[in-house]
Length: 256
Image (tube, helix red, strand yellow):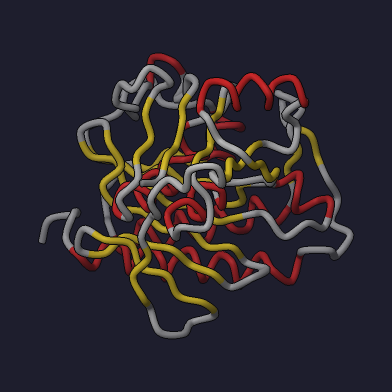
């Protein structure tokens, strides 16, 4: 079995859902919030979710390298990485989690030769899971039946852009002029990529810092649903940038 075969995305979805089940009771529970070296927040939910994911990935895919957010924060990123590896963000949108907002996700992406070829994203508060399967994207809610989702065609005059909650009005206006969208909605986490994948939004321009584990799973989900993630200039967006600490440059995610 090749790692890009159909059942990889399903297995990643199961692992994400198991982590979500662990994390959800900790939401709005008054958890202590610590600060990492970059001053970003981290909680016991991040740590417990990552421990579960790493254990289950090791059991399901023995020997395959994993680059994960909390491990990288504590011990640093590897100096080099092979052509096939996992990127894990056990709780993307920790700020939303801390605020009590519902826009946080569990993410696992499989990278092969610089591009995400399989992935799963789960939103614990809503029970939504998006995952790749056989060249398409499926979605299920709270363990229900899975159904395919697809990006929508660009709706002229009605295109919706999803933006970071920290984006300032002048930044959003500059993005509007560049990408031509009509409406905006702010939200946290990789759920933005999944909303585009399921045809609920159209574009997510990110002219700001992110890490590879923030978006690899969502990128896989969006690509399998017919969308794309590129540089603002339209060049391929690649992963495995060990020499840059797995930091991303600017990107834009688009639907149809």
